[in-house]
Structure formats: C-alpha cells, structure tokens
Amino acid sequence: MKRLKLIAGSQSQAGQESFVLNHLEFKKCGYYMEVGAYHSKIISNTYILENKYEWKGLSLEIDKSLSIEFKKNRKNPILTCDATEIDFDSIFKYYTTPNVIDYLQIDIEPAGHSFKVLKSFLKTKIQASVITFEHDRYAARFNFVFKHLAYLLLLMHGYKRVANDICHNKRPFEDWYVKDVNPDFPKIRKQSEGTKLFHELDNQ
Image (cartoon, rainbow, N blue to C red):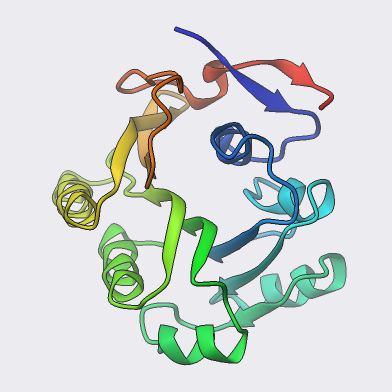
C-alpha cells in the first residue's frame, strides 16, 4: 500500500491532520470544525492546520478548563458548550462558516453523543470535505451500532468511508470519510494502526 506523508510536528493521535492534508493536497488557508477539542496541542487534530497551514476554524469543548487553556495558546475561537445541545445553524451563521468546510472532527464521548452531533451537522446546509468520526468501538460492544449507523447516514449524504477502524495501540476507535474520492488516493486497510499509514516525517 502506498503510504501517506506524515507532517512534521504532527500532534494527532493517529495521523488525522496528516490524512486531511494528504487528501486535500496540503491545502493552505482551509477551514475546520473541531467537535471535542481537548488540549490546544496535545493529540490535537487541528494544531498543525492552524499554525503551519494557516487554517481558520472553530472548536467546541465541554470542559471549561480545557477551553481556557486552548484560548491561551491558539488564535482560532473555541466555544465552551455541550455539542449535543447546540444549534449548529445559529453558530454557523454567527461565525460566517463557509458553505463547504475542509475538515470536520467529531470526537466526544460516549459514541452515542458523537452520532447525535453527526446527525445535527448533516441537517445543516454546511458540507465537509473530510470527516473523522470517533466511535470507540473498542470501549463498548454497543458502540458498533453507532459506528454502523454513522456509516449508513454518511453514505446517504454522499460520503465514502476510506479508512475503517483506525486503531491506536491496537484499539479500533475511528473511521475516516471523504466527500470526493481521488482515484489515485491510497486505500487504507481495515483496522490499520493509524501511525503506520504514513512515511517518516516530511518537511513540506
């Protein structure tokens, strides 16, 4: 399998930001939405996008202490909120979100909450070119249901799953989707250890 390029300084747990950049041909000045920001840098899927590739974006985080830390170290805005309860249309209008965003991360717990957020997002007029959806299948048997429901829902909205059961420490936790598939883009095997999908650090 052709391996992807791992971006120098990548902070992602399984190379998510490198996957996004590979798919979008290392796009500059893109736009992301990050549901479940966690730390501003540690295992962040957007840190390099903002700081090296000049992306704009919006992050959501329920933990107030993490939001405070994020605001001290990042330029793009973060909202302290419960992502399962917000009105996405109002937020997109307030922040003048592009009609097509480049990357949507959904990474909250439990898996049922991630699926609820995905449904809310897909009801809006905003589309995403790349989506990483965390289902934490390893953590609970019933999480497979939310993984499969997400797959069916995204399939109906025109998305293609290009990475199934990405693993970290041999634990399958996430699927990766794209809206438009490049025929030359490498196919990722099921249950791939995310960090093994990439070449050594690339200084692009």
